[in-house]
Image (cartoon, rainbow over all chains, first blue to last red; front, side, top):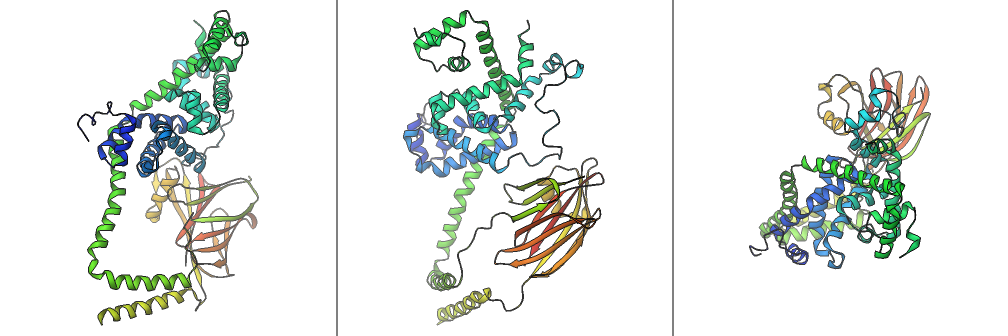
Length: 202
Length: 157
Length: 149
């Protein structure tokens, strides 16, 4: 592996895959540097759990290492890694429907999904926005989305993938990508309507 | 210009936002957008949600020590590699016992294959065959790593 | 010559080992039932729980774990034993069968003589099932049922 190739940015995907298949450790380090933030971003977007996302990142790269020799390059390395990441996230969700280490509070809080009562200072939208709760509210509402819709939303927002690219990662039709993304945004907008409307006031 | 795209349609707006419309379709919808406050608002909401989500993610990313994560991943890979290598080394180190050991192993394998059924995977700590109760709710859980089976139920008060 | 002796010895061992599946004596299963009170509030790890506490802490997020009682029993196939749990509850365990790697057990929990919960499980050898959820005092009861045979 030449010194030039050690430069993370200069190595094109085809050459990187070839070096990975030959077992070059340096190539694997380059792969890590290039993809770990993206992988974490997707994992966090889907699981909304930092600890699990870190575990998933490790599992993804271990899988890539183990399966690189069976990787068929026509799929594209990014698509392949995205696919592994999403599958790891969805497998995690299925194994562990709700993160098990719970506080043993009722799983559905009373009034979950309802807006806080208006008129009370503590809960009025202005106060919450001042406390930058919109970000947390968004996370909560994301958690309520079905995982398939969340995966599409995350791939779009985190990676900026096109509908076609998302359809290849998730192995679904382009129309399904469009409808799931539309559904995700509509749900989020409905749930956060009050906060979004407040933000509109000049 | 594709006139059917010059209208209030949340699905078209969504595709416009994601830059998934063709050139003509995009031009038609852009023309409509100039005079439609509700579509403009909807577009701003999309942008807002996107911005808030990305801000949250960036904040999360900034708190991760990726160098430490690199070390963990590299360590994992190295352990996978070395396990195989050590087994191979030990195997060849014991070459002087290779022949009689192979003979004994062959006899053992033959004996076991004739007398035992297929080995089963260990699986979860307990497999639930049936469950009944005068309870208000039940959850059956298996922890991912240790595969510990847990039944959690709430009694009717 | 030496090699022949080793091979003969190994053959003998393998024959005895292969016959292990045959039942020369009735099989029994050893059961240990721990009743633990898990609660929030003050931080407490019962020293009597020792190694088991790490397992609990890795699964649950309570701050306090207290061992209320422990029962040991030995069951043959078809036999039933009773263990007293906390809060007027009792656990009846019946060994329905013992296989190579798993034992079939029926677990029935009673509260004040009323049957509230029954399950039939296949328990892995040297493993446990945790049954939990009943409210007790300021927390919840967990029953760790461990079997070995």
